[in-house]
Length: 96
Image 1 (tube, rainbow, N blue to C red):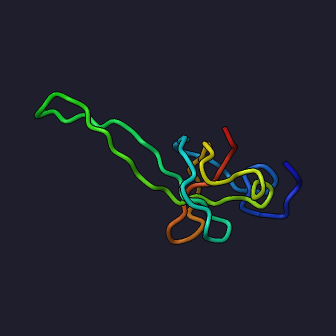
Image 2 (image 1 turned 45 degrees about the vertical axis):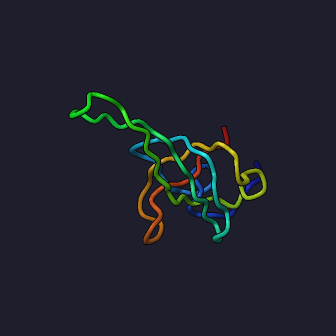
């Protein structure tokens, strides 16, 4: 990882990661400084006493120092942070 001037970088900037830390797969990298991460999880349905598979897409900030190493299809670790924009409250912490 190279040094970056991104103030919203959890490593080189001053963005604090607090709250939930999730793992998912990058499905899109089209928007500037943003990746779309898809995570799969199990949800318990009490009526049927079984689990069902669900998925959610989360928009996460991609710091400048990770732009080259994170690509579509990679598994990444994202952490919750303060709101960066209207739809982004997560930041990519590392590539798994």
